Length: 347
Image (cartoon, rainbow, N blue to C red):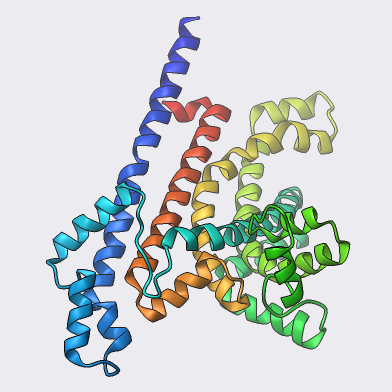
């Protein structure tokens, strides 16, 4: 009884600490992004320099507050974030509206990438461990290293070249065909901005097929990056688990090798995968910027690159803050699951 109470207290203390750490994590990222953007100058001069008289540019800078001391600007921005105000872009769009409209597209892309990562990474990791140091193991390890090390944009361009240009099997860019996109944005009762959900709600198989076909290449590009990590993790941990005493004991009792792997070793080998999921989500969101830009998948990553080119400080800071919050919250949830699965993490 006392041991159970102690374990619950340790779990509560661990989760509280991880929850509190979200605040400094987000604050550090917001601060870094803010000052890096300010070092490059102000966006009004960058966008309008040479097209407006200097007096007009100066008046706009004054109105936007860019002539204030940088610490004053920083304090004003933090105060706005604390009150849920991320500001407005240079074309006078609310940053909240951008997050609400394009955030679901990035979530959808990460979902497809995770489907690919689990579908490819887990079976190949298990097979590599079972065929240790044989031809299949060497081939799978080479595959994992190749896709983990290859630049995301290179994999994206290669897949587009093969499947869209040469074979003409899959669409080359976008989240859906233009007519389907209009239908999904305006023809459904509840617009979630997640096209597969909108397509399922609309109920037309041709539209569902169009959305799925457009998701294949972006999902593969981002998913194979994470699959390489999963393959290596599962292979290494499964090999270590297969050498454990309780696995040797199961073999000695005459348990089939297939059951030894699936029932005794595989579940424990998955714990490290859960542990790194938080980091992988951060990696995916970073890779989503290049993936979305290459495939013109209009999510937060795509628009972040566009606003960077325009040097729109407010938009970049708002999107970066949103990504930081998502990564921090996802890491907390993964840590919580890991602590529940593996009690050793709590102490």
